[in-house]
Image (cartoon, rainbow, N blue to C red):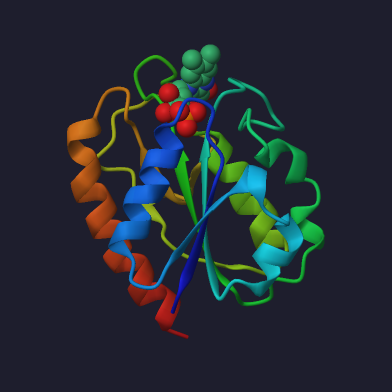
Length: 172
Ligand SMILES: Cc1cc2nc3c(=O)[nH]c(=O)nc-3n(C[C@H](O)[C@H](O)[C@H](O)COP(=O)(O)O)c2cc1C
């Protein structure tokens, strides 16, 4: 299963994480959301990883603060039935502890509405934060990464998650 990794980034953290994931996943492709034909790229992908920071603190909608906000309303209308899709969120669990990685959930719900098979949920256990819209049930709806406070944990988080999504994407 080959992943297309699509990212948008304001100050470079999300771009860096997308690049690191690209190196961990055999055969994957890396795409900057600002430079692609969005619908075409998303619909032709075998499996997707969508990476977003959270900038619009406490917002109900358009939480990313990047180009994802321009596409978010369109995503549910795409035809993505059963395509494996995973979300990565960049955030700051100390300064924005009540809104940690909130943008992940917005992307997650949009892709789920389009029929995506959502994979890559992550336990909340290894994270310290007050609140996050991206906790669904007992799990994060994707992989939270905190480069502002916990960059030393990032390599392990990426490696563990890469193994999980490869497995989940391939299982039917
Ligand atoms: C003004 C501002 C608002 C932010 N709001 C949030 C937030 O609500 N939730 C969160 O988890 N992180 C928040 N962050 C942290 C960023 O999401 C984090 O630094 C991220 O790594 C940036 O990614 P980027 O460099 O790819 O844009 C905020 C940062 C700033 C400076």
